[in-house]
Amino acid sequence: MSKKILKHKPISGTKVTCLYGKRNLSLKTASKNHKGWDMGGSGTKLYAVVTGRIVSKGYNSARGYFVELRINSTTTAFYQHMRAACKYAVGKTVKVGTVIGYKGSTGASTAPHLHFEIRVKGTPVDPRPYFIASFKSTNIAHTLSYKKNNATTQWVLENKRLQESLKKMGLYDGLIDGLYENKTRSAVKKFQRKHGLTRDGSFGPKCLKKYKALGYK
Image 1: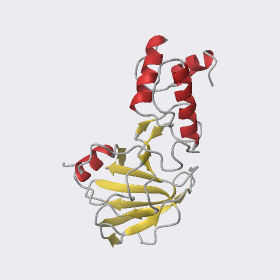
Image 2: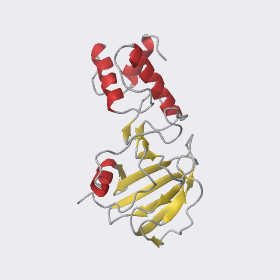
Image 3: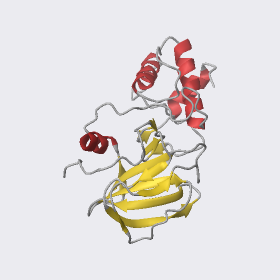
């Protein structure tokens, strides 16, 4: 099935502060396996990515206010940490581009953002291929949506600390921006190779143990 299924971005702009997949495992405030994208964007309105039916909505302590939109028979779009409840009832069909909510910081969140998921048969998958296929973009911006290079979320602060330490070790020459992306992952692989650890680029428990043994926190 073609991944070219999104007709509208869920939020203005495409500023992604945290990607899908494993995150820095020294993080203590959120899931280590990130199931979607954290998106800032340039606005606060959240849009329906397709014309589809609202299949669920609600609130819980982790997701905050959330809404789920049917894309096709197997796929849904999931929006979390909304400012308030979606005004549309479950079962209501909304047109593509309809404002279905506003960016917020409800639930397990430390700053206003949208946590956006693509779910296939109920299982979260990486949104990247869907954005690239749908919007013909191979240059999705992974930039901070809060204050540039001065984000306050805990995971960004921890990643900044890691980048600073890797720079002191001579393993990292990128920006201290708090984004666990290719340059940071490459530096972690260098650290792992230097200390005889599995070179997977993931800052896991063994990596953290060695890191702390060297006097870094």
